[in-house]
Length: 347
Image 1 (cartoon, rainbow, N blue to C red):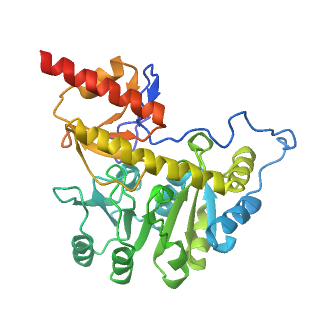
Image 2 (image 1 turned 180 degrees about the vertical axis):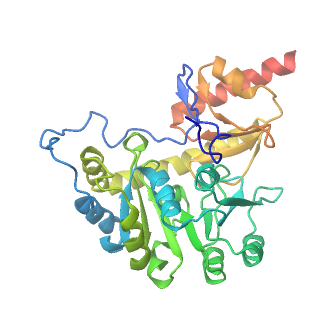
């Protein structure tokens, strides 16, 4: 069967499937909310799940202080991104974002026959919102994706800069806040969704709540956009187990805040250790550090030592992203980096 042209050149997502002792490549968090598993005895698996995830959305409402009627929950932010494109994108519509940023924006754009245009970052990997606004005025996009804090760099936009974009374009502005809980500011745009006709905010429980395996994300927008998205959303899209786990996680918000505060402190220490070793790091408001290394085979050498980080390829050769782990994991990473540097300098 011949695939459609839009997908024939796409490369499947391939996580690092190699043995490891320390895994710091995917921005995952510890399993600190459910370390001994979850009791699911009362769930009735013979019945379809609540198609609207009402109880879960009520828990999200309490967490973000926005009415549940403005919330849609799904299988991670990725389902929410695809839902937006399925609902609003026609072939050859334009989608804008920055570069580098979350790869699924461009991938889903190709799948839905949209014209994806990226605004390059500055030399220091900061992102210029004025360049985005000017380009949007020229090309009239249907959707603009803004990742803040940005993945993979950790760059955080000033909230007023994003609102300036929203006010100066007719495009749907989708603000991806997957890492917002790790930000020192933690100022979400969720409180502004009812004030604008073209603003959508994405959130997830994969990162700060440590539920990457549960695949739970949600979006928040005004009633008109939510109504349109609900006409397209698949029925029963979120299974009963994930809904239950999400409700339980959102009843432990204080644990989440303790965890994220600890990661923020660990990041400061890890960043300083990397700088001391001679690596060039970039300011990050997420649970990872983006850095540059002149060691050409750093990723491969770490894999040999069963430590995983994320490497980038052309045009970003020499750049890496490392998830901030717990103190022990970070110390093991730094110890191995010191040994690698010593070995390289001895050659």
